[in-house]
Length: 630
Ligand code: G6P
Image 1 (cartoon, rainbow, N blue to C red):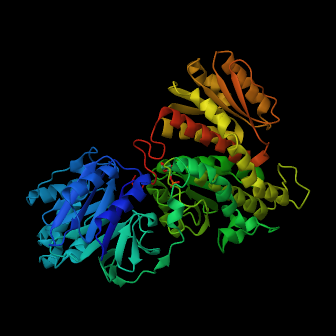
Image 2: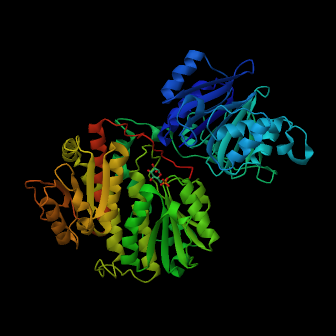
Image 3: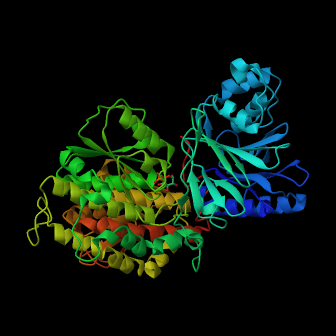
């Protein structure tokens, strides 16, 4: 979703800003723009609908350059993706870029129009530009009792944000203040970069790594003035504050494409490494320690009587999978709710419940709001499973586990999902242990009283097992050709593989634009069977588990109606290829952790179908990587 990059430094900024915007392309966007203060201190702006490459051409054509600048990729919310709605928005001599949604923009707009401000876009952001301008010029409706113009841009932005409701990360430059820019943050992510030759700001660290790895993470309510040599910050109360400078361990290489054709492909193939990194604490004969979730985890895990998982998108399917593990191994009731629904539902809080929020980015607005809602209802035990250590969600939960997937750039989540599953399995084992449900070595029967060491060994083996699934790529690629003329697909799974069918369908629809639906296979005859014909491929996830025979009966129901089956079966499933039944044998049967292997095959299928369809795999239309607005 919208991305911001800003610079105030010694070097010419527009090429840095454009490179930063390219790094943020993965967040999803449909137009881009930048504004700089040129050598004479004049404001110069370029904007373009479409890709950053189009903006780059425009910037070159218009010869826009300067040492202070703000830049933006816009993912349309208010107003269609047209140049007139692209950021920066200007009011008089100032320009603003913004990520987030201003909820009271309609009221503010009416007030500003009454003062004579003319709006030329459909965005909520233009309201901010005029509001800052109104504060600078002392509009009494906004400057309060003092009724005098705000002295400078820093003061004016502080005044303006006091009138905003909603979420924002924003940056402002102004003619006449050619050596500084002002930033503010509430809800949406924004961080500062401290470089040798200047100061920078961006929505995520990857855009700044070419100039610095020293970051300052702004808190909600912070407003800052950046100059080449200094950062001046005030907090939500207007008090001067210093924020810690943190060294980011991201490397510029980790966000490079390397030998791969797409980030999604790279990230699918990085999964053995990502899982190995996430499970590093299990290397050697190490036993499982609750401390990996935080200092108080042991006491909390023993006290909780149930689990509530809150998440969106792919992360919610990780939660759905974990529900099967938690109830089976830990014996605790476990519910999973879509964060955007939970936050608006009247629900009954249980202070002994463990609230688990799962998020790759740690910035998803609905997940963050659901966490706030849970806390406001009196939930005391909160835990984040997240891939970004400095994110809002991590900062706002009592316990956390950081997955070590590394930066995920492809919009369709892959390695974040499998590392979330690994983390959730660890959590399950610790909950089981805390409730006396794990047995010593050799005593496990895989059901109620599983053996800790056996399960840890299976976890340790996961990277190797995933490698073997990746080796199936050529066969999956051949299957993908068969989807080239299809418009719909059905995904079937049962038990803990039903969420994998959901994730497989999500992957396919996100990147190939084929309409895909997932069903628990037992529900087939209650509706979706009506859709089955030769034009509707039916993808089946068929592990050799306790439900396999039932699943085979469901497959018969499809075959009997002329449907074509694409079955991912475990090697020992005794499902064979026949007329209308295509079978791909997975390398090994993997018990409780089998969803982690099966989902990798689903990712490869979606990726290769998207290649056949010729879609923009890493930046699917209309979607964003990090959804920082509601
Ligand atoms: C967006 C992304 C998905 C992701 C979801 C939740 O929709 O495109 O890939 O699963 O947000 O994101 P989170 O960062 O909270 O896991």
